[in-house]
Image 1 (cartoon, rainbow, N blue to C red):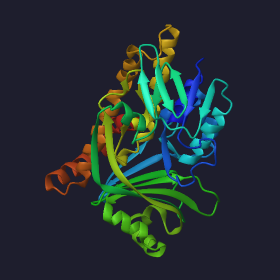
Image 2: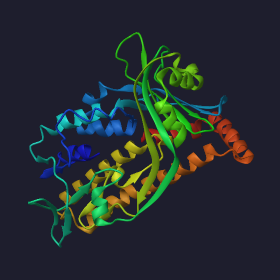
Image 3: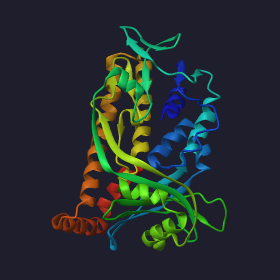
Image 4: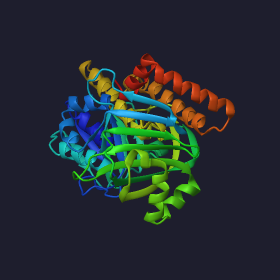
Length: 378
């Protein structure tokens, strides 16, 4: 998100400094094998920035999303009602990062400070001052894009609402025999949601998919340590109808699940974007796209302030960004949390409501169109 923010704001006549505790311009973090589902709305924003054509070559389209509750008889099929664009695009995180880095290397109004940790932040009437070792950085505005465990947020002390789940996500990328046909699946099992995202294949003989399965922590960790043969058997029992035989696992990892939202997305000469502002349960796959909307809102806010000759760090500007982003994030934070509770519930009443709801939504073109457009971000 920080790379995308720098890329977006570099289109304005601003002096931008990108600070990172690690090494940005290196052979990226190969351990991050995760994929991101980029919504159509995010794709349109990337087109405006001139970076989509480079990301697109690494992507696999999502043309249809099939959602099941417990069994295949309870289903909702989502497709793009307008037949323009796709429901989304699945891209490896490292591919997105690499393309953003390539783009940033050509920005003449951007400087980069690597291996630089923030130690102290001070704010006066005219500037924000950031200290690191013997460095003192003076700026009009500080943008925190340093993730869920934001170091900046810790220094400033912005309060957050937090939700810890007793579940973790087992994540794996694998090759399989059956053609995924650009269909994504979300299967709501008793233990937690299991998502299958179509990935770009490296050859014409096999197909690749990314799996994200939410389970109680003990089960997820056990599955991670299980030998590949037994793991294959456990997973094929759940997904064979959609992927056919699993051929090979490329990567596996477990991530604990939690969510949070800041009480506000700004402070004195400071704004939060992406996971430093909010994080969601992955049930709807919207976390990254919500961060992209933050960046788009920030670009709009700063561009207007610049055109009106305003100091970019004043409360009026920072609060305008907050007003554009907060309601969207708070709504999704609540919706994803409640959806997770509803689909995990074993209550007879909730089970009946889910069954009725699935049937009603699947028969209603209008409601499906509204849900689809919202998920696409258009």
